Length: 126
Image 1: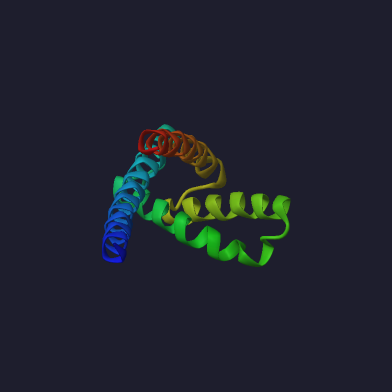
Image 2: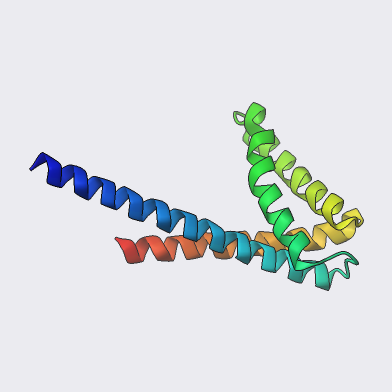
């Protein structure tokens, strides 16, 4: 009885972990695609899909890490997150603030699509 419960728990956890990793990779690709589209619309010279993927990964890693000290202040966190994301796009694409803003808007669209995708997947699993 206890062995069956443990086996089911481990199997469920392993399935959840694989699904989580797969979903995160999918989100990175969606985000990178929209960043790349935004870069093309903004006419960014160095707007390649590889750089877009690098931006998606850097935003996912650096933004939460840099916002840890400001987690109690929601408005400050949102403003800093915006500035950090724009700076990452500006630095990696080696472009100006205006073009990085246009690119960021498409990144925001990707985040909204990702949230809806996550909600859809969670509804299917429940």
